[in-house]
Structures are given as C-alpha cells and as structure tokens.
Amino acid sequence: MIPAKPITVVLAEDHSIVREGLRTLLQAEPDLEVVGEAANGRQAVALVNRFHPDVVVMDIAMPLLNGIGATHQILKTVPATRVLILSAHSDDAYVEQAIALGASGYLIKQTAANVLPKAIREVHRGNTFFSPSISKRLAYRNQKSPTVQGLLKKKVVRLTSRELEVLQLVAEGKANKQTAAELGVGLKTIEKHREHIMDKLDIHDTASLTRYAISAGIIESSVQVTII
Image (cartoon, rainbow, N blue to C red; front, side, top):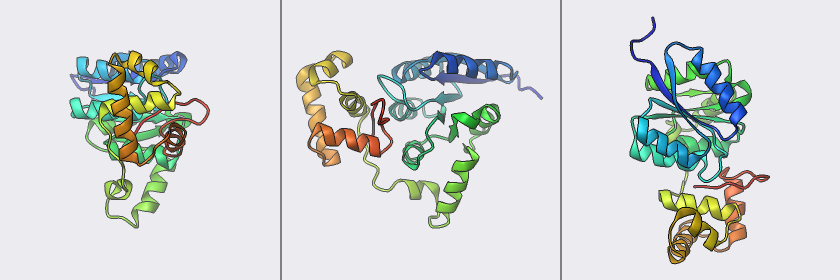
C-alpha cells in the first residue's frame, strides 16, 4: 500500500550524472519524493533547513563542506531528518565517523542501486541500514562490544561546525586568507579557529593536519577534502 504522504528525500551528490541517476531511480518509486538536490555540503545543509526532508542521501566527498561535516550540521539543526550515507568508500574510518555522528545507514555506491529505495524506507522507519559488506564487519566487531555506538566512539574528537568547515578548507590546501574569504569571516577569526583545531587534535602543522584528515577518512588522498 502506498502511503498518503510520500517519504521526502534530499540528494546530496557533487557529480551531476550520478545525482541524475539517483533521482531517476527514486522517481520510479511512488512512495518516495525527491524535494531537493545539492552539489556540495553547504547546499545540502541549506536544503534540509528549508524543506525538513525525511531522509538525506549524502555523499561524503563533496566540495566546500563534505558529507561528514554536513551530517554533523544537519543532525544538530534538524535532528528528525535521517541521514543515509552513499559513498564510494567503505573504509572503516568513513563508516565509524558517519555512525558516531548519528547517520542511520551507509551504502556503497557500487551496490546501492538495488537497495537504495529499501534503505530509505528503513531509515525513515527509525531503523539502520548498511551495505552487506559493512553489516558483516560491524557484526563481527560488535561481538566484542555491546553497542555499535560504544564500539565506534573511540576518542572521536568533536569540533564545532565552523571548525569542521575550516579544517576541510585547510586540508584542501587553502591559505588562511582564502579560507576567510570562502567563509566570509575575518582573517583573525580563521587563525583562531586553526589554533583551536590544532589544540583539540594535538596537531601543530598543516602537513600533519592533512595526513590526519586522510588517515581518518576525512579527505581523499587524491582529491583533498576535509573534516572531523
């Protein structure tokens, strides 16, 4: 039975061809409605604040603000929205960050076409949904921990939303002046944010910040994009 009110969805994916494919896939489902599309994390946050969708399908590697940072902001401002990560990366670091921040599911792009509509319905119901390979890893690791959250929180450092944005831009190679212009704030403000980030992470040079971001799954090694 098709519900009277469809499940509303925002798609956040920086590749337009992929985004179009996702939209076409979801439009074929009578109980799902795509109400907005974002090409970067900032657009995703703005669309969620505007439409309050039931579910956000969120890519991780996006410009300006990546999916981890966007998830962090969305779940603080619109906690009723469920976040379903859809990524080409299945590394534990990515999965751990997403779950620790409150994402309801994590799908691998290569295998998502067959299960995305089902995953959206499941997370909308309040359940979690993971690609089979991720589910197996979580189940194995969960044998040693009573809850997924307890397993994954291992000293996850919490930065503010603004610090996450600054860290992403720093790891992308932006200078302080460029970062200030990008975020529309003063240079001294960016310098203070960088100081706080380094203090919280106990990392004190840009190269080490970038290496940290790569190892933590915050940016890709080939295309540098950050957060955590």
